[in-house]
Length: 184
Image 1: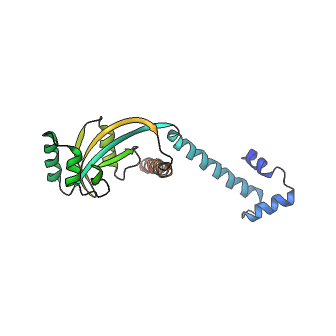
Image 2 (image 1 turned 45 degrees about the horizontal axis):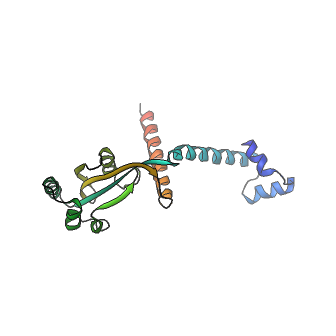
Image 3 (image 1 turned 135 degrees about the horizontal axis):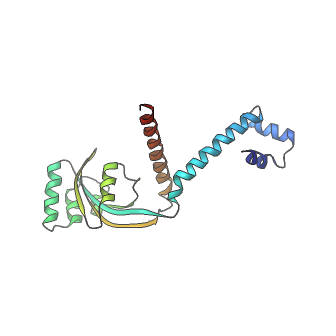
């Protein structure tokens, strides 16, 4: 922290430094140093938690069919076992309007990108070509098929949301661990 403050202070007169601190709401250097320490610690935690997102990460490419009832999902599984095409059944039967016209294609995603953790857990437990279901979620019952699995970079437009999801997932884990520790 001292090095950070020295770098910020370099080239400023004492008056300029005091003015800069005052403009940022600090009345003394100790308060400023404490704020810098907290900010630096928070950045280091963020960097450590998000480090796995640098480079290639495991992603799956999958498709799904969403229906209202478990029985409908079981009927779809039977039809798939009899050789009907997944894409055709998705277009005909899925209630997911965002994917049905694409044959249920969800595209590529990481373990932290799907809205429902159960669906993500199942998808990442499957090998390419495997089908699973019914998977109950808030919107219905899913039948899912993994098309491909690969380590690949995350597209830049998906990165901000993924970073937020990964950080919130980590934070949730820390919170749960603290609660468990507290009640031991």
